[in-house]
Image (tube, rainbow, N blue to C red; front, side):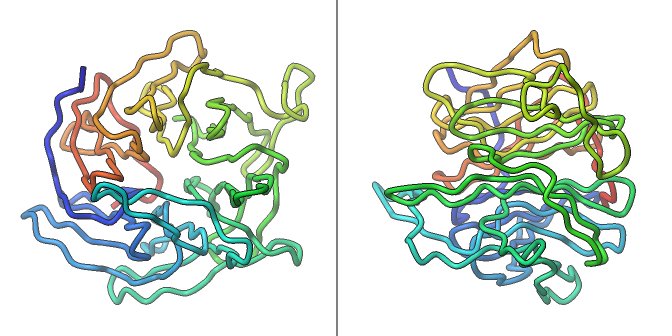
Length: 308
């Protein structure tokens, strides 16, 4: 059974990374087109920026600019009129973190490497309240092998980037808890949700109780044929992750004991954001259908840092 939803916009080329704006509009990554699209409240839309590569996540910084992840390549195949992601070629170019001026659409590369090592495929991003942001590097999946993924922390002013945790299996969605004291990370092929507690801004706390490198706590690991994509945390601290194959949004309670699923009609349900006058609407990207849709949410969404 599919959840009732309202179509906001269609005809997008594998949309991801939506942001709900205070004026009722949206910014959305068009991953297969290498572009950021501005959808207005009246239903009109224009391309804000042609950024190339494979943009998948964006967030506002404290200066009002957009900051985003770019996987470096957009490799899609069309099947039955739908765009589907494909394996990365062996010579796929590296990805990067970008800064976009919303007024002009000008894009610049903010980070291309960390400690002299190129980034591989940055995927999702979340801003904190301390001048920095967290992002995942998903790595690339090729026909014969794949990269380990990683979690990074960086500063918006371009002065600092640090790999916080490596050797993850396809880290994708990343979000902060409502109090900003924990980072949630979704692993794609394992369908595992991890929680990393913070000892200070940009610093993981160590714990003997953690299952992943004395830092990561397993919030939930789901069985069956489903993968986790990008995510947001709602106002009550539920980790809400777009779920592939088991199409829809999976919501996991803060203690990991309760799991709810909101079914949607696209096996590539890839991302969401919260918005609306009361923050009780989830705006979800149905990527192979090329749609941004609105879904009523049972809890208030969490307003992101620097939202506008």
